Every structure is written in C-alpha cells, then in structure tokens.
Figure 1 (tube, one colour):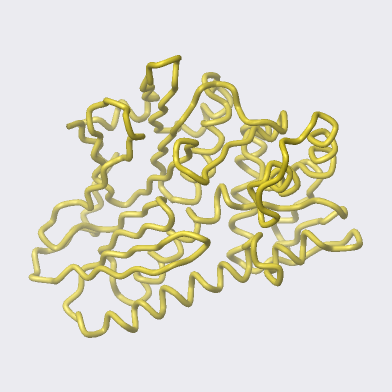
Figure 2 (tube, one colour; figure 1 turned 30 degrees about the horizontal axis):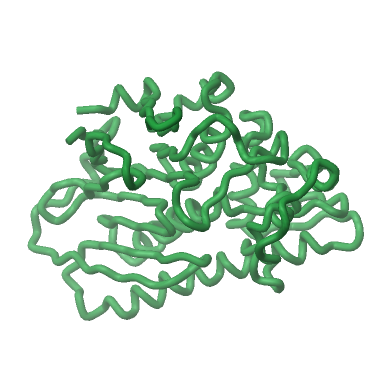
Length: 320
C-alpha cells in the first residue's frame, strides 16, 4: 500500500474529536452518480441536505449539460447568429478554467469539441459509424477553443456560429467542488464529495483521520494500491478502460495512440484536476507544456501486454 499525503495540513480544517456521525447521501446527476459523506451531529437533518445538494446539481445540469436540449449550453451551441452570450457565475468559472487549460495544453484539452464528440458517437446523438478523414476535418474546422472569444471581466462568451461546447471533461469536477461549497454553506466543513468519480475532500473525519480514497486500478492490472489522504484537495480521473468512456485528441480529431488507459490527477480543486487529467491523457509522454502547473499525476500506459505506471515528480513528492 502506497500513501499519498496532502502537501500541507490546514490546522483550521481538522476535526476536534467531537463524537459526530458520518452521514452518507447519494443520488443521480449528469448521467452518473453523486455521493456525499459529511460529519454532523444533526443526523435527522440529512433529508434537507440531500435536497440542497440535488438542487445545486440540477441547476448545474440546466446550465452546462450537452445532453439536455433546453440547457444554456445547448442553446449556445444552437445559436443561429454570431453573438456574445453572458454566462452565469458557474458556467463562467468552468469556461474560464477550461480555456486556460486549453491554452496551456495547446488544445489537448478543448471545451469546444462538441462536433467531434457527436461524430464519434459519444454525444446525445448516440452511436455513429466510424468517421472518415473528411468528416473528422469538417468537425474540427467547425469547432475548437480558438474560435471562441472570452471576456472575463463581463463574463461574456463569443459564439461565432457553429461552435459546439462539450464540458464533459471538466463539469463533473466543478460539480464536486460546488457540492462541497454547498455543504460548507450549510455548516458542514468536514466532507467527502464524489460526482462521477471526481472527488473533493474537505477537513477530516470526526476522529481526525483524513478522508481516505483509493485510486482505481483497471481490472487485470497488477499494481500496488495507492491510497490518497484527501484533505483540502481533490482528485479526478480520465480513462478508456471503462465501458462508455472515451478519449479524443482534439488536435487530430481522433483517439490518442499513446497507450494511456488511465490518469489520476491531484489538485486544489476537482475542476482543475478534471481538466488536467484529460490533458495529460492526450499529451503523454510529453507533458512539458503543463510544467507551470506542477501536475501531480499517476498515468497508466499499456505497452503490448504490460501496463506501465508513471508517476510525475510532483506526485512522487507527496508519497509518504
């Protein structure tokens, strides 16, 4: 068993040993599941907490789902004329971080690949025939983050007509962060939040232990377990080994050919970890463009019949 420790312990976010209970809640959102564990002495109030969490998630879906035809994102994608669109704070935060990672990774992460996602059968249109080179190039030409213009000061996004956003590589991470914030607003500072495999750990368990999370290893891969002490940080993953998961290199319009089957990234927020995990899965083995981010990542790469584990230096430094 290998242990990954947080870079620092926040003395203001450590439980004082009070005999609080840990309540577990869960539900559905974004085509996946959400789960919350939080420390409380008000166990009967859990129903109200569950309703607050579900309401927050439902609002995010109404803003950023590319599956819901009436979402704000879907309306943006279907705009018939070039125009500026003012975004609400959640949507704006996701676009701001998404475009920052897109620029840093030279488009290895791209929030504007909706046409490519649909073309390969991973979007609301469902399974599609394997696309030919002409169709791929047409989809690439219609989209891409460089065609967008972002006015951060006024939270306005320029739609030049034809660009289709797809935030599936970052929205679940943001949702996990948002749920942790909801719990904090309700007075629950010690919690573990999961949305579709993206996790946020705030504070500690009532006994003072961190929220322990084991990184998932694909079936049939023999590696020592890696357990993360998720204290004031987040972890998100990207992979192609689970049914329904996919990977696309926005720069080529095709699946990557680097052999990466799974990536886990630790960061201060799940939103950032989510976007960086997608970028790492595409960029590997050359992660030099992400050097300013000091990405703490575990990367699993298939080499023939063997799966190799690569740990970036920032992650190695966190091993206890």
